[in-house]
Length: 213
Image (cartoon, rainbow, N blue to C red; front, top):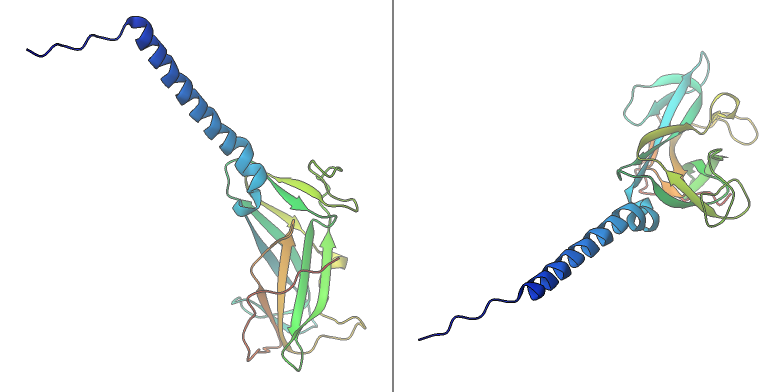
């Protein structure tokens, strides 16, 4: 006849239940720490997407401007904005330098290399000073807190818009110009801007370099 195992004493059962509860509490605490602090602070940039908002300013004079696949308009300048989409449900921290938002336009030269024809930059007034906290606007690098959801920031407008002229003030020649924006060092997809129905036989580049200043 097989003997029936003796039931564990109540104290032992309570001890095992306490250990299980403690383990579960530690797992929950670790998951909460990861979701609330570790991911937003360590991998915040992975959740942030940046898009260029490019708008032609209609004018009675100027080239025919085609932005992406939009209809062509006669314009004398282009206004540029930055759209930031933080897809994490909480605010995230990303690294940033003294210039929070940047934009640049490039055109291929006769040898096919990309040459920068225009650039602009703007700071984020919401950023605070300090190298180890939300920072910006100073000479060093820091961090920026990006709230959840989507936000837009004007990078150029009015007098600071892209005038479609070169450094000497002469109208830019017909062709395709490639515009890109950056927010906190995170780049947007490249936007093609064709002037006077210009074409680029080499096709659009995947990337264009970020200005250093």
